[in-house]
Image (tube, rainbow, N blue to C red; front, side):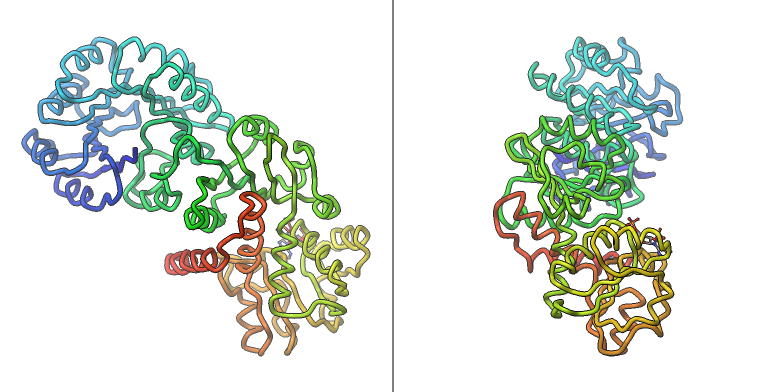
Length: 494
Ligand code: ATR
């Protein structure tokens, strides 16, 4: 179930917020945020709320803001039962006697007994689960803070254990390493996922907004949902989830695409092999390291030396490189490549993939880079020209490709090379996708060049990933439309 957290300073704004909780199954009312508490106001709010309400009243040590004493705090929970709250959340740390008394006098309310650990992955969560289980609440809630991706795995194992024991559990990790786990927990059997009503209104770190969870199709996820997603660190800047989740929805594929912030790659791969996965995207810094943990690698990805896509089939993981296809496809949709003189700016992973693809298409490639030795490495591996960025003025190119991050948001005013070196009549492709048109692309467009925005590479790469994972043709135009809508929203916020 999807619970919208209402954390407001007074009952009036709480009531207004509840009206905005579109699509939520439940409301969690955080009484500890409310400064004008009166039982009559609570009763009125509960009576008028169409959704079932969880009443929570956290003290400071439990991540809350309740200012009064402990007796008063528990008293308010009791009064919430009398006022008709559907659920009451009481912390194990309130003491066994308080919890037992609340459960004994719960009337029509359901009791959630919760345990929170804010300090890392060391908590004895099985011990806490057993302690709470003995109290026989309606729901057991265990929340820890993931200090690493592996913090999620203890929670996932706990959910599976509770499921076997027929116990209703809510379990997930807080923090940026735990973000994907909040959604995955629901697939594995955790009963409630909490969402804030808007950005900046989160009641815990890592909490998604209601709109974000809807974009993950949270209410359609179930135990049969297949798992895909992006492995990287950081991953929050990625937009691929917008396209893939929309495409899964459109094509009726029961799968979800998550963003996995992964610090311990081997442990992540080992754990996820056991889950119902269809594959992963891979980004910085794991594109090369991941090769040693997978079972096979496609010829092209092997020659490029980087994997940005993994396909999981019958427990076997195979690596591919869709960056190369994504970029070459984007260029081929606008220009011929055979025998064309192409300059590639930058000599990182993307440059390798694109240079490889261009050479396959029989283009003449020169890699120019800030650090000459990195350009030379690519030139040696793939047999092409190389030089420093300053050499651009001496090269008569037809196509210019930027693979450096220069010009990416927020550095909107930067260009990887002086603008006067952009030649009339050429094709200019920038793999940066935020902003949609970088400074160099805007200039090139004014000069009459054909420009290729980075979003095209993203769409084309994701289209191939979708096909590799699902075996179905991706709804390409629909994915492009979705990402363009998202981009518009983001540029309004920028
Ligand atoms: P990716 O996988 O996206 O290609 P990468 O492997 O980190 O990312 O490569 C980034 C490329 O952009 C590198 O070639 C880098 O140049 P160096 O080899 O000199 O590090 C280049 N790059 C990054 N920041 C740059 C800047 N401010 N100016 C010019 N080139 C830059």
